[in-house]
Length: 362
Image 1 (cartoon, rainbow, N blue to C red):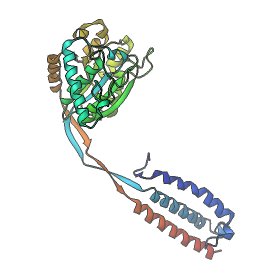
Image 2 (image 1 turned 120 degrees about the horizontal axis):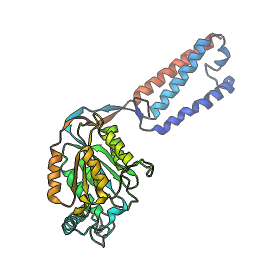
Image 3 (image 1 turned 135 degrees about the vertical axis):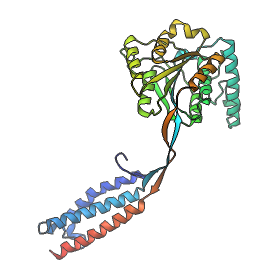
Image 4 (image 1 turned 180 degrees about the horizontal axis):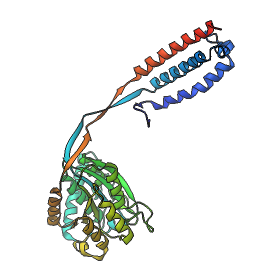
């Protein structure tokens, strides 16, 4: 629960605390028929007001402690923190409608065919039913009857990049006309690769590079990445890995705002953009806005289908400075039910004793 140093395994039982209201109502209504040493408790409140308030407080606290014990309180115990040298990367993956267009480059077609066949075999080895494994590779993927698409090439580029990131932290964000947080910064690269395999299970809408803006009110790809670095980034080297066909613009107003945010002291962010599609796309008018942004904040535009260019880009990324970050190895929970149970029984015992004193002083 927010604000508490502990949590509850069975939080639903905390609703038992609401029974205090009818208990006090019945206590007040039927005190003369309860047959308890404290039946005349409210009768004597005026004679010993401080003790009477103490009596009610002890009963309330004791009851609440027993309710907490029923809900099984757990105390989190953070494991030893691990320090390591790392860089922080946020992958922004384009899933807009244009990413489902066919790629005609024979080199990229060969790459995708080999990759999809490997994914298909892996899915079968994991126990997926053969009839459910389509040409898309992963179970349930949509069959591709028109040849390789840009989204398939994007999955390959992300998978290839993630393999190079041992020791670093990586996050994954997908976007079309808005951004979707797939997984936060983590050293668990396997889960990033698994999430990347799911990209393209549905066809997205438009492409939002610069939102929120006058024409695109939703948070766009770059702003989502910047926000995530602000929330979770630790390393001095922060890089957006942008995987897209680049088919969208950025207004001059938003361009200036993005550059300013990426150039803040301690928040310097670079962009390495892997452009999907034909190799000529990296110099085409459709990627002009992307090229302009990369030129101002630092980084590089790379043709995702050019194996040698991708290898050279990875080598340059690997040379970026690492810095120390802290990771929590594990979080365990210790059952502290007995503490609340002991406190509840003790407080109720004191309540009975105080009720007896009130009776004697009647």
